[in-house]
Length: 198
Image (cartoon, rainbow, N blue to C red):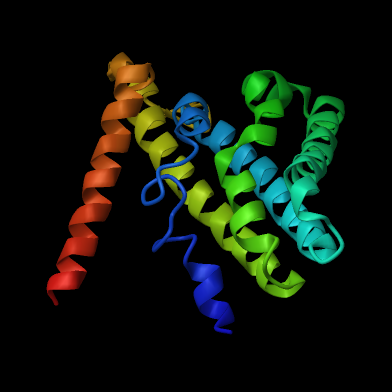
C-alpha cells in the first residue's frame, strides 16, 4: 500500500470540500476568522484521527448491521471530549464556535471516512487518511478565512491591518462566503484541468 498516496489524497485529490463537496455548512459558518478556522480544524482533525483509529481497530469484531450506530457512538464520544475540553480550557473558543462543535458528530467527512476507509483498512493507514483529510479540510477553511477576514474586516487574528481602510462587510456575511468558496472551487478546477492537459 502506498502510504504517502493515502495521506496526500485528502489534501488535494479528494479534498473534502473542494472535490468531494462535503462539510460546506461548517466551512462557510466558521470561516469568518482565521482563529475560528484553526480551532475548528484542530477539533475536527482530532475527532477524525481518533475515530479512524478506534473504528479501524474494532472493524473485524463489529457486526455489519451494527456498524453505523457503533461508528456514530465512537465519533460522538470524541466530539464530547473536544466539546468538554474547549468549554473547560478555552471558553472563548467554545462560545465562538458554538453549535458547530457538537455538530462534528454528523459531519459527513468524519462519517464518510469511517464508513468508506477506516472500517476497511488497518490502523496506520487509517491514521494517515484521517490526518490527510484533516489537513485538507483545514487548508480550505484557513484559506477561506484569511480572505474573508482580511477583505471583510480589515483584520487578521483580530489585529487591524490597514488603519482607516473600510472593509467590504459583505465578505463576512453569507454571500461573501459563497463567493469566496466559489472562487476557490474555480481555482482548483482550473489547476486540475491544466494538469490534465499536460
